[in-house]
Length: 423
Image (tube, rainbow, N blue to C red; front, side, top):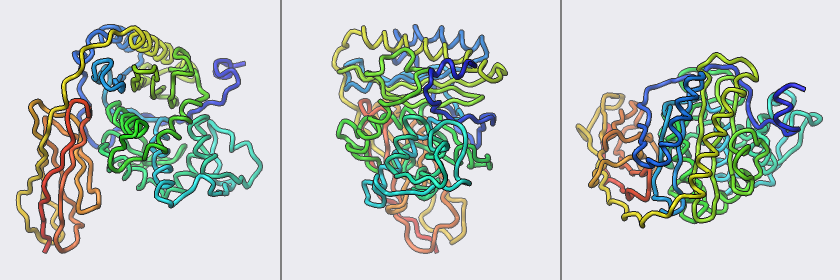
């Protein structure tokens, strides 16, 4: 028995086995490390990151207090914070899109789908082993996509929701910048630059988990799924079958998560659900050591285990701090260099500024009426965006909504409408 079969103990691998190197289309500065946000925890985790680097494993992570302040209300970013290829962790973004369309009535979980032979792909999953054509439902595909990371189910669900645009529009509309999370190809699909790939940063995934958790707690963010949908997806995450990463250390009853691995990365992210001390956690590794085959997982996964053990122990035994201060109020404003342009011009760059008593972190969602134009990450309280030359003639009502990275630290705000007239 090879190592992969031995370590899975008969469980199906919930990952997409891809052999493409990570890509980095576009440019975006990574979120900065902030060990001072959670110094006691950072002090315990930094040696693990350093040891991993020495072994050719680039490791980055986030840990976010979701308990309402019982642990201090902070989010820690440590290690490699720039872009990773996602492997199967990106399926959490597709899951939200499926449930959003169920909420709108465009889909139901009982809708049937037929999968033909050309639509079947390899890697993890169980649908590929059924006789063709395969008859299934949206609900079953969603379940299998999360619990056993079924790649055939994933690819069919991409078609069911209408392709990649709705997936990315949901994430960007909820405040996650394209540079931080992007679903641009199917499992085992060819990479087509610049946008036909899968990528995410730890910051993008931290935002996604925060969105899920806010909805799970009954405080859904505008543009994201409701409480029932979030509870459904977290329920599937609690049924995760792969226990080789976070699940090798954290008791299953306390963990809702989604894994992802291939020849270049080994990731796990989700929720540590200790009552009253809930946290979001993401651990991301990249193969910088030239490891081949199972040697990569032998190298990377023990460091994921160490991170999981430290975070679990720290959260379990942490003293409850003083109550956090109230969130700082913010003011968003949108500025245009001019308000009249000729049709076809693409040189108009708008600027969004978000002001608060301290420099706010997060993103801004830029809209033209009800349509999302872009989601941009704030840098030093500021974001810019070049308007597309395809804007039709007539008035365009532009506004920006600030989505804080930490809602406990900053309040959201929306700019006044600025009208751009295209002649």
